Image (tube, rainbow, N blue to C red; front, side, top):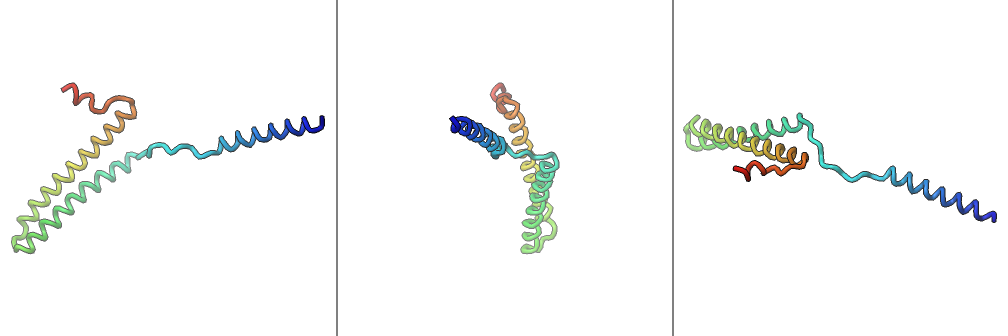
Length: 113
């Protein structure tokens, strides 16, 4: 009879240890949360990258052809357009993610039109 209380105490201790391990177990990774500042910086970098690449291509062509600043102005404009287009695509992705998180179909309005 002396083993029964000891056995019950060991089982109770095992249950407590299992509960503690479960409470401290790492949780499943959730989707990354982007703050508004991170999103804003991403969009600014996309715009500046488009402008920078356009400037570089235009300046390079102008130096090779000796036609400063014709190509530089053209490609800066094209880089600006590409940067804005990329920013709009990013905004659309973020909007779709927000709608999906709300449990709606992000392209439901497209299907109605």
